[in-house]
Each structure stands twice: as C-alpha cells, then as structure tokens.
Amino acid sequence: MKSLASACVASIIITAVCTKAEAGIEVKGQVQAGFEMEVKSEVPGKVKKLHVELGDIVKKGDLLADITAEETLLNVRVLAERNGIILTLPIIEKQWVRSAIQPGGATTLMVIADLSKLLIETHIRKEEVAKLKLKQVVTITSDAIPGTSCQGEISFIAPISTPKDRVNGFSVQATIEKPDPRLRPGMTVILTVP
Image 1 (tube, rainbow, N blue to C red):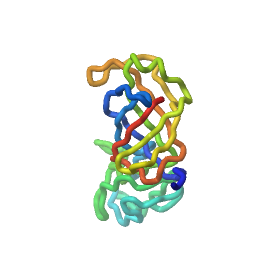
Image 2: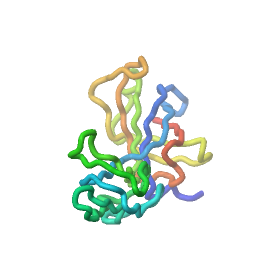
Image 3: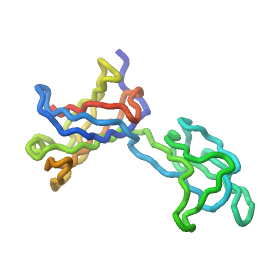
C-alpha cells in the first residue's frame, strides 16, 4: 500500500456530535481547505485577461490576472502572494471589479487555498474533552478512500466550553502534515481519537 505522504492538504470542519466507539471517540466531518486567501484588485477596473483557471496550482509571484484600471486605463498585474491552488474563480474576463476603497468593498477575483497541511476543527462534548491532550495522535479515514487512513495530532483545545447544536462542548483542532492526496474539499471523513 502506498504511503500517505503528499503536498495536498485541506482542512476539515467537523459537523457531527462525537460518539463513543471501541477505538475511541469518533466524529464525522467534511474536508475543506486549511488556509484560504481571497485575491482582490487594488484598483477598480475591467478584467482584461485571466491567466489561471479553476484548479490551477500557482506559485508565489505567478501572474493571475490583468486589470485595466478604470481611471488611468493602465494595465495592473495581479500576482499570487503565496503558493496554492485556485479554489474558486467567481469572475470572468471583461467583468468590472471594485477595489477596497469603493463602497461595498473589493470584488473577490479568486480564492487561493494553501494545501500545505490539513486542519481539522471539531466540537467535543465536555464529558469527552478531559480525555484529550495536545499532540495526541488521531486517525482520519474516509469512505471515499476505503482501506486507507492518515495520522494527525491535536494542536488546540479551547480553554472554555461553547454550545453547538444544543450540546455543550469544546472546540478542538488537529493538524495533518502529510495527508492522502486523494482527500479533497467536500469529502466526508471520520476523525478517531484513541
């Protein structure tokens, strides 16, 4: 079986209430990007050219789009500020976009997701949280990738409880440094805490 090492990473927002299992606490969740950055234009204008498509992998400094500035008609180049993948691309060429100084705020040109590590965010019942500790190893599995799992570790336990879906519990986060590259935003996963 192939190792679960990869540069592809996403974050998981856990939406279900935890349940006890023989292997430990199990929580269902959905994969989402771990870090997202909205790319916006510094000037109002018209999208002259898009240099990327949805799903493209970009590196810091790559040309993303050309905007023709509204007032000066000069060409403004929009560059990637970090490495990542184009997660959303809600604009099209020839579309007018706003800048941050205009009423209503800047138009989001695209969202770049940094897939360098996976973040898992969950809500654990107060009865179970005392069993957790920082750097504790957790296991992530998905029905979409049967027979495989990857390891992560708890990186944050909230100091105070908060209610969620009428259950009093604690926000808990775990990270995965080398997830299976087949894990993608939108997939359902199971987080198991021993």
